[in-house]
Amino acid sequence: MEKISVIVPVYNSEAYLENCLNSIIQQTYQNLEIILVNDGSTDGSAAICQRYKIQDPRVKVYHKPNGGVGSSRNRALEAVTGDYILFVDNDDWLELDHIESLYHLLKKADADIAIGNFTQFMEEEGNFLIHVGGNDYFERVYSPFEWFQHQYDGQYNLSQCFTVPWAKLYKAELFKEIVYPTDKTVEDDYTTYKVYLQADKIVYMNRAIYLHRKRETSVTKTVNLADVYPLQSIEERMMILQLIGAPKGLIDAEIAAYKWRLAIHEEETLKHGDMEAYQQVLVKKSELYRSVIDDHKIYLLPQ
Image (cartoon, rainbow, N blue to C red; front, side, top):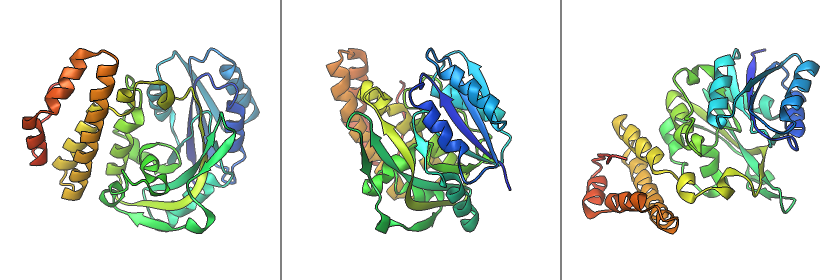
């Protein structure tokens, strides 16, 4: 039985961490390496990590000064000894056959990445937001470019499935050249797509196997929308996709998404009085810049 490394970045999650860790420890697939990276927590999270380390020999704990979730993932990747990698956020939890289902799916398809869907738990309301019903199940194998076609697909919330690092099982070798940014609010927007491009085959099952907690204090609830939808990441993505010969339809979708993000940045920078950033957005929206993009000749302006 191959070893799977489960990575959990931990930061001030005392109220939720035990539920998260119990759902991992009790998985039907048991050959696990559970890597907890405590990112300078100031509540009781560190003590919980240490207790689980004592209770279960599969648990490894690393403590570091606070540096953000990107730095925690990078530290965990350095410690991985498993054949596969799976991420879990410290306030979320897994269906008990989550890992086994992804593993069997990956093996059946001879894929490099196996992906499942998720259910949202709305913390304040105390209810679940369900994207996938029992009759919606299907399995499908994609090339990376075929999977990119779902990057902005709202059906079954596939767009979020595409971006987030969790609800996926990856061959560990895909992360040899991957580094998460440590200075970005939404580090997955800069990173997850790069892992897809390392793969030859991706398999997806339309089943909710991950429980994702949405809180009023979550990143996407509390930060400037310009940080949630960064321009730099999509500019980089457009450039990489063009350089590696992505189909025109994928580039067109990126351009449409880029224009949408520009509109968000124009509104947010003006609302927050960041006039220098506002002027930069206006430059990027200029007729000259738009015509360059529309010709698929993407020359990125200095940031």
